[in-house]
Amino acid sequence: MTIGFDGRLYILPFDQRESFQTKLFGWKGTLNAGQTAEIAAAKQVIYDGFQAAVAGGAPKEYAAILVDEQFGAAILRDAASRGYITACPAEKSGQKEFAFEYGQEFARHIESLDATFCKVLVRYNPDGHKARNRRQAGRLKRLSDYLHGSDRLFMIELLVPPEPAQIERFHGQKEAYELQLLPDLQLRAFQELQGAGVEPDVWKIEGLDRREDCLNAVAGVRRDGRDRVGCIILGGGEDEQKVRKWLATAASVPGFIGFAVGRTTFWDALVDWRAHRVTREAAVAEIGRRYLEWVDIFEKGQTS
View 1: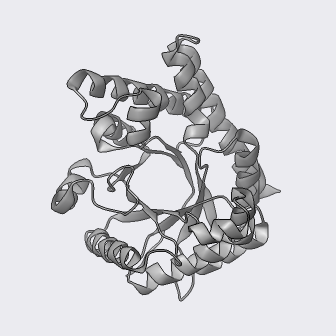
View 2: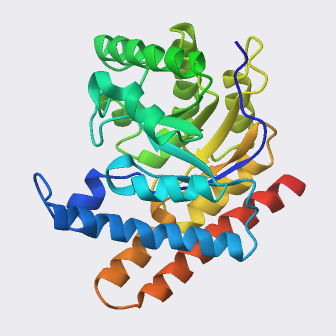
């Protein structure tokens, strides 16, 4: 089995579901048709910003969107018809433990949308709950086997949330945890999941401040002949300054093939648009501007 992805990936991810519903719109419980349509319309604003960025110079061959089926099925189909790289999540939103959004029907949904990548978000700390980690690894292996068996690309978004004892070591300082412990935990997570038969083509991982840690991450995902497996850096909803630093650091390391920066790109623009502080056109333009900024930083980092 050959795994990996040739090329770069400049992803605008807006596959959030729970946070859109509860934090952007303030809605609880089951949505009605009108509410669903409102969220879908907000996601269309993001997609229009993405297309504006491509029209403004972002390289179309690397431009990609990640959006969910619930609110973005029409967007996924339109993007595919226009030749963009697409990705769709398979996980249930807002869960501590990875579970399939559509249960045993996951394969039917993947085949119906036929996105370039199937993506899953998994929270996996090697020092965390052992039984939960085993259950997650088992589900991920099942998905991995299905995707590679049907010649589809697999992307894992790996989050390593600190265990209480781990964050206590750093007196509750998240940045200290991310700098001093997260890189090693990521490497252990790669190894454990690979050992369980989980073989993504692309790993979407949390930002790393040091180039050395980025080099080690690539070595971890490419060990034992996985030479074409790539890494992309995620934004994690952080401020622009931190995202810029992560992008520049990752871009200088061969094996980091791009990024997936979502909320830092679109959240403020959507909040302002919904509050009638800016027009829809202004929100679209701002989203496109930010996405183009990330592209520019990454491309300059690769050539510096």
